Structure formats: C-alpha cells, structure tokens
Length: 107
Ligand SMILES: [Zn+2]
Image 1 (cartoon, rainbow, N blue to C red):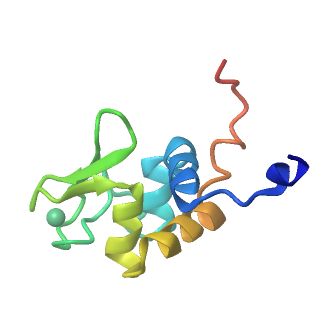
Image 2 (image 1 turned 180 degrees about the vertical axis):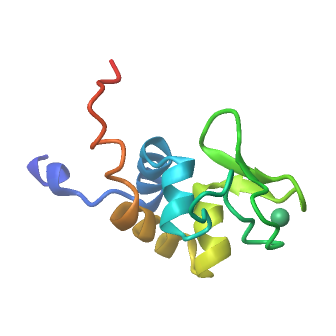
C-alpha cells in the first residue's frame, strides 16, 4: 500500500520516538529548570533547587527532595500543564533535534 508510506505516526509512535531522542539535560534547559551555574535542574513539582536528577537509563528523572519521578513527557507536563500530545509536540519542536546535532554516530 503506497499510502502507508505517508501515514501519520500514531501518538504512541511519536512518544517512542521522542523518548528515544530527547535527553534529560536538554529538556531541563529548554524548560528553564536548569539555571546557569546550577549543579542540577530545579524540581517543577516542589520547586526544590538543584534536586532533579536523571534516572540511570537517561530517559527519566527523579527529585531528591519530593521523590517525584517520571519520563521526559511527565517533566514537560509538570511545567507546561498540557495533555500528553501537547507535551510530545513541545518535545518534538524544542528538544528532538538535540541528538541529531551531535557529531558522534551511535552505531
Ligand atoms: Zn521535587
């Protein structure tokens, strides 16, 4: 089916793509959570300073003060207060190109 080539990706496919390409530090900076010179981003849930950490897999975050945790989409929603689709769109527009700009190839 030639039409399948132009099929729009489903929200779940876009979520998977966004999760695979966005990085914690890039998202935190784009959300203005990571102030210049701070050791880590501020928490959008409890406003604790420099308490937000990336999880081991790099696809999630957790707060050392209030123990909130989630993925990058949850982090965007905590700041922007939108629906999941809105957060995915925001990540696609603001953060999804960050890995493509890196010179090293991930083979
Ligand atoms: Zn917190």
